[in-house]
Image 1: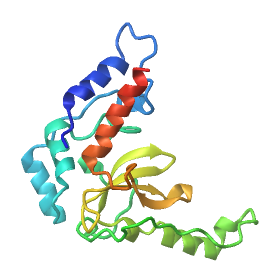
Image 2: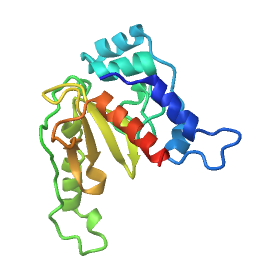
Image 3: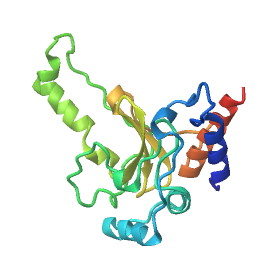
Image 4: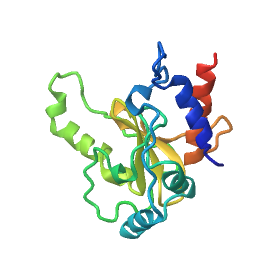
Length: 207
């Protein structure tokens, strides 16, 4: 599936900030990215990233950052630059990206302790749960591609059985980690995820 730059331009023309626009940026998150695409990455820089991290980026995403833009306009608050793949993460494992992503189905770890006490978050039990729930091992082999808000992120799997698929990290909202699923119960790759956002945004604006 190809991402059509013309549709991105059309979306920008309809909802972007024009001089005569009375109510621009109606689509959620558009006030942040303002429908702007970052400059594309060269093949050399992409290869350098892949070599450094011992991976091959999923083709749809690779084509996007090389031929469309290195992030910018996109779902929610926009697509991250490749170099921001670990946004707000403190990764200690140098092999983080080339280790297989560990999940194939939704994963969650609900806190089962006593949360009636106002200070329960200071308890040893809660801190141990927090360390396990938010451990980087649960998202290894993936890159963050978009911030949805409220510390919820879209991420793209780059290693393992789920390579090329878009997942959601909603651990901050107690909803765990789960794959983005289409109406036919299949996974979304990067291009499918991005194109659906463009098409749905155009539909909303044409109502």
